[in-house]
Image 1 (cartoon, rainbow, N blue to C red):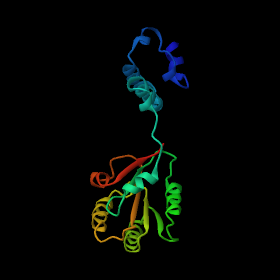
Image 2 (image 1 turned 180 degrees about the horizontal axis):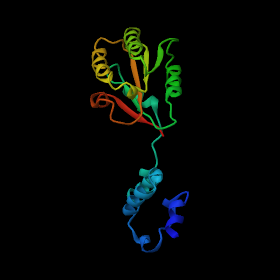
Image 3 (image 1 turned 60 degrees about the vertical axis):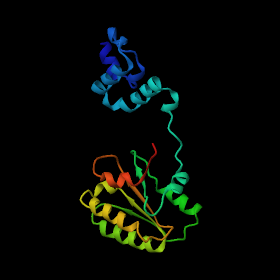
Image 4 (image 1 turned 90 degrees about the horizontal axis):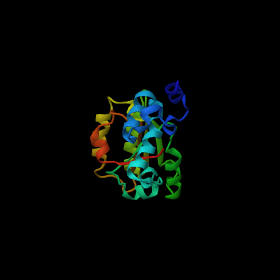
Length: 189
């Protein structure tokens, strides 16, 4: 009965375990939550990090796109690793406004069915005109990603000084490591 109550609890990571199980270490408790309530893993890991490493590691750093932008260049894209429900488009548009980017020099392409050609044309145009290209959901076109990787390397040469690339993707294995390696990686939950 106590186990059923614990499993059915809205936040089992905050509820004492039944019987002798109360004596589990915080890490072993995390393993138990993973086995019995995987839906509560994220908050349980956050709690464990604060307990094991300290409160300062449990607080996310503020999202500072402007600071990251200063490190970006035509050869160094900004790559947003997305969380469910997060869309950095508004932040990129605000950054474009703050940098007084002319109308038409920020183009977003939501990748998916047949948009690869559109994305390549946008990259080529912004490369010459000094605009910003934002390619969203790159994980949706895994077969095209090696082409994108080669294109990004080629576009680094002879680019307009103001040319910037923003990429977005959900976490997963589809994005080539090389793209991640030469990008500034940001996430915002």
